[in-house]
Image 1 (tube, one colour):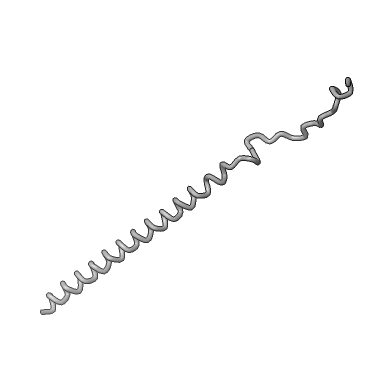
Image 2: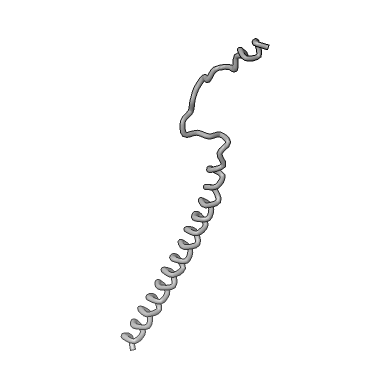
Length: 71
């Protein structure tokens, strides 16, 4: 009965601070990353479409002014 109390449990070989292998915090950051990546892509497309529309408007305006001057 006394031998049960003296059982060796092993020893700690190394301690890593700030690391939890059972943590799911990395998994919760991935959907947030994808959300912001997709959102930035959508905003980029909207901005480029707006710039394209402005460029077309300016070209039409220049062509209209040239046509008036030639008459």
